Image (tube, rainbow, N blue to C red):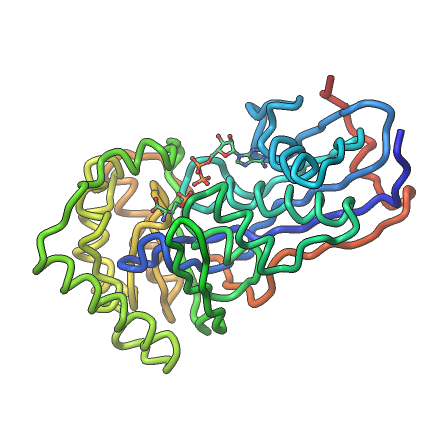
Length: 315
Ligand SMILES: Nc1ncnc2c1ncn2[C@@H]1O[C@H](COP(=O)(O)OP(=O)(O)O)[C@@H](O)[C@H]1O
Ligand SMILES: N[C@@H](CCOP(=O)(O)O)C(=O)O
């Protein structure tokens, strides 16, 4: 067994796209995935919070990511006890897979002696997800604006907007893979021109804090119209939330969560609760905060690893 000092990696959730920033813009949010690693003679994984259905062996995404990082450096992954404490619901459009990938890469990089810098970790993470929006936000925090051509990521990180975020998270899952299959292969030039101008306006509005532009700047024609049929409440929220306190509203990532920026969060929460109750769709409506900081790694003492007190479900 390879010895190392126990450590913890804490990764924020994220909301991708913000409307027209499809596969490009991501925002870090204050729900966290926390991974605690302790040397152990065999792999053991324990899950608390969201993720009861996750594999607790080598098939777990975090372990697959770590193993690949070790393979690329010609080393074999040490064995450990991994405690996963997860506040990010799975397959809801809040970047759970991106958080797992970023967490796995940051943990592997630490165990390997930090061969990768943060930009190289972003590159690796983007290769796993094939878009830099969620992984960028989880890694760097704030708002990440990135561009990936399949080989290179170029990006700018900006401060998150000083606005409240309200999310409506339906109980049903929607896997990103499934929500990408409904998207068209080609776009008409007029649609592409319009949505690209909306994305430009969104970036400018975020940079200049022109919140009154968000309702128009977050209009999207890349993905939301095609995903409406998969997401209860989306078409109505896009049409009416701005009259109920939303400054801008969008599908969060691939959905089914709907996200809105607001300065009137109680009013907007009441609106979403009434919308979902009328649709008879079970959903949690709550306010989240944007976060300026991305993933953090903390060395810890064995005594502090109280997370290992619970039942160990692993192999
Ligand atoms: N904490 C985690 N540990 C391991 N795998 C995870 C974790 N969170 C998410 N995943 C993997 O990511 C999948 C969900 O990814 P995805 O469909 O992209 O949804 P999301 O919008 O939540 O990112 C899960 O089914 C699981 O395979
Ligand atoms: N740009 C991607 C974002 C997917 O985000 P997730 O949180 O649903 O994984 C897309 O829209 O497909």
